[in-house]
Image (cartoon, rainbow, N blue to C red):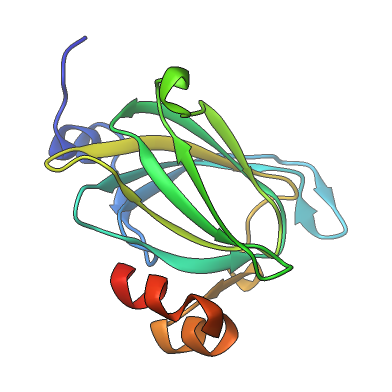
Length: 157
């Protein structure tokens, strides 16, 4: 399989900078509304090596699907305050998975595991994504809400 560059994907899908880090474009928004919400949305999300997908929380469940590139490690602070690590990638023999559920109200962020690479994924939400359902987390807020993980947070950020 041909190895494409970050710039190739940005241009191919007209990706825009994402406030979480990386690049994205919306690929689908269900036309049907339920309680003033689209039933589902989908995006392409490209995360280059060296850029951290900033910690944030979404109100609803989100499913990530790996497409190509290098594995991406996602860090969850669960509703119970437990730190979990998950790897989205192409090799199940290494504990990687092709898709991953991020439960609603989970604080999460991530990074590509290999240098000089990227991860291209899709993210699907139902009900559909709206910016008011997203909450960004600063390092200071993480340290305040998850003090038992101070060493981890300081090492990562």
